[in-house]
Image (cartoon, rainbow, N blue to C red; front, side, top):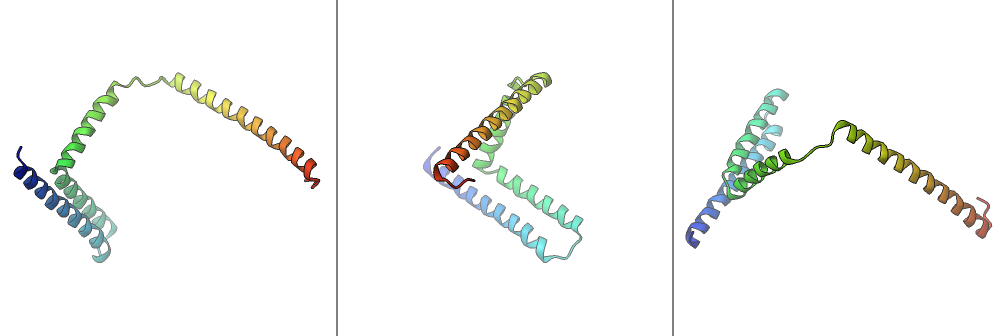
Length: 124
């Protein structure tokens, strides 16, 4: 691509992002300004957010994000997830290790408290 088409494409992207900002601003301001029921406001906001998302998806960054999301989904399918038994065993190991470290730190704190109170003579 040449520099002129790059500038033109980014110019259209700026206009699209401004349109997204305006649509979302209308959603926020309209939520406070127009007296409607909560259901009507929620539907209107969802519709406006979907429209803003569709406009944002037409920009270069939007297309890049959609491509990234598709590739991420493909990679997640390749992950080998642990079984329920492996998850339970790992959780148990973490809980036991945390309990042991808690007892060790509690004992160390008690010992240091006695030493400091002995050295300072405060008798805490």
